[in-house]
Image 1 (cartoon, rainbow, N blue to C red):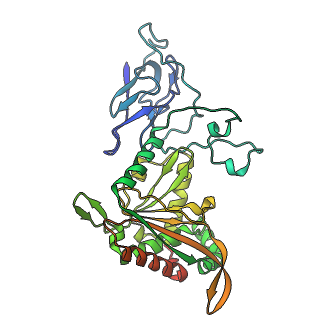
Image 2: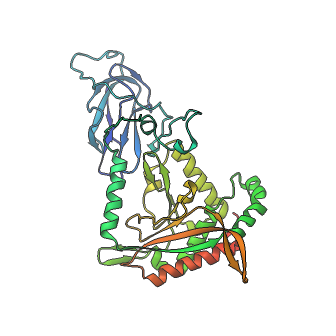
Amino acid sequence: MKVEVRVPMLSDSVASGTLLPWRKQVGERVARDEALVDLETDKVILEIPAPASGTLLELRQPEGAVVKADEVVAVIETGDESMVPGPSVQPVAAARPASPVLPTVAVKAPIAQTPVPAAVPAASVLLPATQQMIQPGESRREPMSRLRSRVAERLVAAQHSAAMLTTFNEVNMQAVNELRQRYKGEFEARYGVKLGYMSFFVRAVCQALGQFPIVNAAIDGHDIVWHGDADIGIAISSPRGLVVPILRRAQTLSSAQIERAIADFGLRARESKLTLDDLTGGTFSITNGGVFGSMLSTPILNPPQSAILGMHAILDRPVAENGQVVIRPMMYLALTYDHRLIDGRDAVQFLVALKAALEAPEALLTHD
């Protein structure tokens, strides 16, 4: 019996995808649910699994083809009579080298990690292999991935469609550092996850959004859309582009729940198991350039959101306290916002509220 292999249903925001190299070729045996090919969309990479066990009889679409939901891309013969394809079958042209087969999952996020030889400097760890292999005097041209192209389009569109403005403040992280040092052992032993900075920032952001709900709102045509929940996007950088999984109803989450969720995002991003639902929606975003050493930057909005917070490196700097110059671990904060909707006063006061919460962080550390 012949069984068609179809493109899985896509989300409303994803119309089509591009087929990456086929993992199986005509005539090869396949197992039910085995990944046959990856489909790169604007947001994630989807695995297209085999709907049944059998022999791959026909490839209807070659590598690089743009396909839509429910489109037939291959045919499997489940009986024994077609172990070898007949003359009517047209094999796909030889594919370029593919990544090692990953465990079968429903959806894969666009993150590919390349093993780095010991001799490669640490700064190059995040670079894909194609970037690490360019020799002096060499140049190379290659097409942008759908994800990279889509990110580029969205960033340019954001600059053309929104009146972006960035305001800055700084926060003394000593109290957060002391609190983390005091409770990190107990926290990890109890919850099985480290007490990081992100739970403090997420909870502080939720608290500030409650005071200034306009920062959590969005423009839709001539309307303002107000959001009762703080669905916080956590920006994750990868060699293939930016992904922003969403912490749903973050205002209801404890510190432990936030740290668990972010650790889970990181793990599933590395294993390419983030789903479309993980990356869809969001009312506000946080991006942490500090993990790469950034001291100050102006993040770009993630439409249709109206604001994004940029975190930066924590550096010891001289500051004035009670008339004395002391050394404190300081971080610059940057809030980029859509000035069409958010007034400067609200943006500045939002950052002031965030700073106040982080400099008195006891109330931010909660448990299940």
